[in-house]
Image 1 (tube, rainbow over the protein chains, first blue to last red):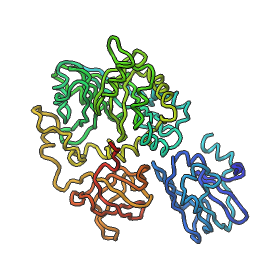
Image 2 (cartoon, chains in turn yellow, cyan; image 1 turned 60 degrees about the horizontal axis):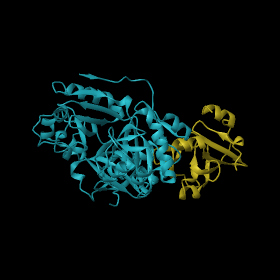
Image 3 (cartoon, each protein chain N blue to C red; image 1 turned 120 degrees about the vertical axis):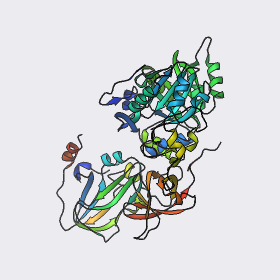
Image 4 (cartoon, rainbow over the protein chains, first blue to last red; image 1 turned 30 degrees about the vertical axis):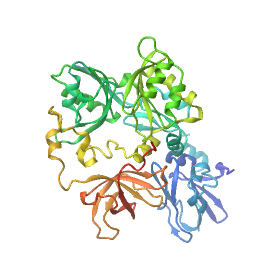
Length: 123
Length: 388
């Protein structure tokens, strides 16, 4: 079980977990619930350079399409193949098995804390 | 003669408390806060295809016509020949503008020799009521917007009939009614027919209609009674009945190839373009609004509505452009009106308006899905048809 209070968050409803010099990125339960059942994810391949604030992937539900933003500059080291194969993991375990990409990042991020994010979504 | 309802800022269904207790997520729909889903769009969609789903459609608009001139008034007001339907029958119809464009699509129930109930989209309530009032001028009928006084619950899916038969409290209207009479009436009820029933002694119009492509029923009743009927159906159905939100309603109707106002239908679209030429009765004697335009028909190069299927999992969505190739100089030949990854079929399905030369099933086109041209094939509608 992921400790959600130890994660950082963005205004795009993504979570970021710092793990040594890599960061793991996913979308929050709030975002997953807003999207509805996720049926397709499009993630950048390992080796792709990404820059903060740009769209690097898509999370598509039966009803709508969500964009995945890179929260920081970096390079993709891994896209979650399990989620590509079973997009419903984004709904069932958004903070765990439903993670989306891992980045290697020269600078580690400073984003919203869990408390700040909860306030941001009005909870 | 007429009266008309008011328009509060944000409308809530009489079933609002029931939905909140069930943990529904809500969406704004035509000014109403309605459930978009309870837990999972896909599970709700599947429940309707395999067992049954329960929908709150209380946002829909209901407008009644009462009086000896009602049938003639509707023949004049709408595209279909409503005077031709028998008491207890229902008919899908269109409200056309003078230029032939579609103001709304409707289901009209004949509930008595001199009585009709017109069901319109929530977003078009005011305009449909106003048009019917204006068009009924000079006919012996009283047009009344009953939307605030009528709730609508739909039970849809292959188990709908069985659940309705088991639900306590339902009867037929009239003296000496009992469960047996209701069971007979509902079992014998044909598609697009209705009959006056009761629930807990209060009137309910039971109709075998729907918007899902499955067998099912729509139940019109007083708002105060709706929560009790909802609970009775849910409780009786147990695991066979899943409460369903508007997200699954949309994917269900899309698979069934049913048009949605604002997507496949609108004021700039003639019925023939949307494949609804059959709904316009050019044979009826009455002169109806939009007749001259319908007789002229759309221009030869007017786009026509088609079904599209694609492979993979990326769905074309409303507003995406359709091209005749994937090269840079390919021509734009149409636009998607609705699309989703079909939960039942497992591949993307969409509806689109395309140039008439590309409407033949089997025609290959390309859809621009956020910068990528994906190949798609024109197919006949519907995408999904239930086994009879």
